[in-house]
Each structure stands twice: as structure tokens, then as C-alpha cells.
Amino acid sequence: MNKSVFKIPKMDCPSEENMIRIKLDGLIVIKKLDFDIENRKLTVYHSEENQEILNRLEELNFGAKLSSTSPIEESEIAIESSNVQSKLLWSVLLINISFFVIEMTTGLFSKSMGLVADSLDMLADSFVYGLSLWAVGSTAIRKKKVARLSGYFQLSLALLGIIEVTRRFISSEAMPDYRIMIGVSILALIANAACLYILQKSKSNEAHMKASMIFTSNDVIINGGVILAGFLVLLTQSKYPDLIIGAIVFLIVVRGAFRILKLGK
Image 1 (cartoon, helix red, strand yellow):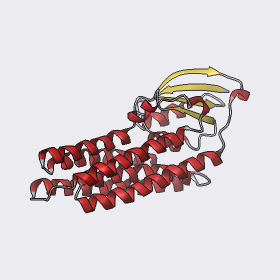
Image 2 (cartoon, helix red, strand yellow):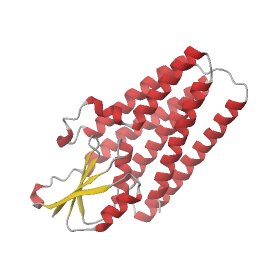
Image 3 (cartoon, one colour):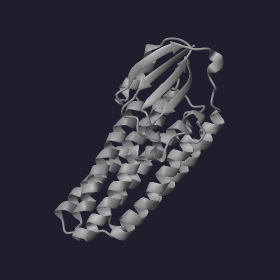
Image 4 (cartoon, helix red, strand yellow):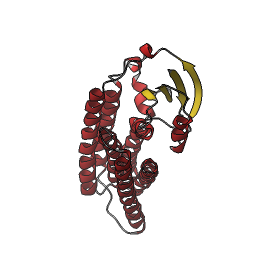
């Protein structure tokens, strides 16, 4: 039995952890995956040397590098229950789906493209968690097909969002409701923190993780950006801070869509 440690600089949120799980699914040599998001490390316990592990990680473009490989006794591995993983994934999936609906609805109502874009980021995470759940008992071909469909759907929504942002930049549009922007984004920030806590609480070797870890998440940074945009809308009495943050988040969603599409290859 071998223990390989990979340094993954761009693995900074639970969504990317699940993308890695999906990418490595199907390699029978892998016995367990142990994620340390705070330190951007992945430990893989596998029965034999296999270059395919590193190859698949490199395909995600997260900057994965093999740090070390060492032999261990099989008795040292504590296999995590798949039922526990499923319950955790269902929890975060429901939170993300709920806030997708909340942010999309309030974003359209308040005329905030920042909230609409953030809702799509929540939807993007939901796709990844949903794909992870779908992986249980499904064939690799079926899973890849679902990944492609999810990626194209997400990409289409993001491109429509970018077009709408461009239209609002050019045309005369009412200023978004900064109160709704700030209030809903704070709730989304709490939701993302809850997701991060739920995903980490079952991992005894990561129980020491500090609250500061939350702020390394791209989702939390996005929430903070929408909150900032809300205050800038208030201070400047202008629609442009909301449109700028909306455009940035839509581009992040586009990047996420391409990552999901890679899982379908």
C-alpha cells in the first residue's frame, strides 16, 4: 500500500474537492482520498504505483504536483463511510440549490446582476455536488454525459448573463436595490460557511481547522464582492459597481463551466 501526497495550489473550496473526487472516480487502485483544503494538499492511498492518478489531476489545471510517495500498512487506512459522504453532499447540495433560488429571485426583483451572477455560482456548486451523488452506482459513461450537459447549461446561463450586463452598461437602467444586495449576500456568506463546516466536520484529521479557512474559499470572496458592490452602489448612487461585480462573477462561472466540461471528456 502506498501513500502519495499531492500539492494542489488551486484547490481552495469544497466544490473543487468534489471535482477531484469525480475525476479520480473509477481508479480501482485508489483506496481513500484525504483532502486538506486549508493547506491545498491531497493525500491518496492506493494499492500500487499509478501514473494515471497524477495525469487526471493535471487535466483539471489546478496546478497539481506530486510531493511525496511512501509505503504504509493497509491497517493504517480508515475508510470513510460512503453513507456519511452522501449525507454531507445532500446537505450542501440542498443549501446551494436553496440559495440559487433565493439569490436569483431577489436579484431579478432588485435588478442586481451581482446577485444573479452569485446565484449562478451557487448553481455551479450544486452541479458539482449533484454529480458527486450521481457517481454513486452510476457508470462512468453516464456520469460524463451528465457532466457535459451540466457544463453546457451553466456556460449558456453565464454567457446570457454577460450579454445582459453589457446591455445594462450601454442602456439606461435603474439603480439596483443595495439593501437587498447586502442583506441577501450576507445570508449567502453564512450559507457558504455552513457548507464548508458541514463538509469538514466529519474529518477528524481536519477538526482543528480555523475559521480563517473559510475566507480562502472563492465563494466567500464572491459574496464579499457583492456586499462591497452594494455599499458602493449606496455611496456612488450608481449602477456600475453592481454591473462590474456581476461581470466578474459571470466570468468565474464560465471558468467553472469549462472545468465541469473537462470532467465529461
